[in-house]
Length: 187
Image 1 (cartoon, rainbow, N blue to C red):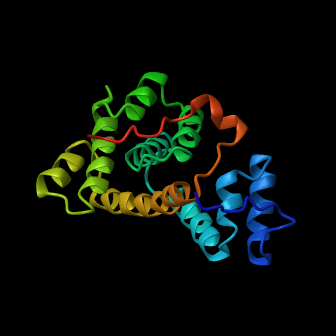
Image 2: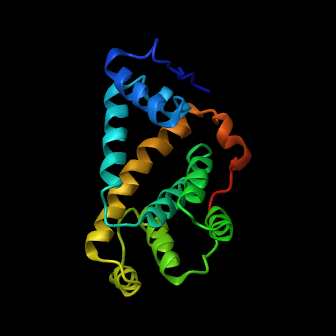
Image 3: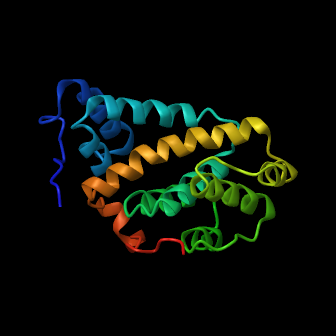
């Protein structure tokens, strides 16, 4: 395993320090993902910027939480899946929906299932979706702009999930209870 440092505000490169300080202020600690990303300040800045932009999309907080969780599961991210499980609870997604997303099962709510499925297909098909996929997404009440916003989310989660993969980001204590077993990849 390649070793990637878990930077603190004291050890981080100068350009990463403001983002670590902001994370500490808003979350109460520096998450290990952010601590590892600090090794490459441009990556950390890009991630933080995309995350802020994603919060400006037309999706509700529940929908954004579902998107981030579904994408993390699809990328088999051992770190981001528990992080977004916690976020999904905070956004009032029910435990059954969260469990279904984590198990790669359809969710009961038809609109949320259309959203989950669109995210999964976007990753699996690398953006080469059929017209029928887009039509089903729109039939669930989403727009073409929303389809493009999913691409923004895929970019965001690709940054963090791939860091988790190569750096084997250790779970922060608040995430341990929601650990995601390695190898739960889709068939």
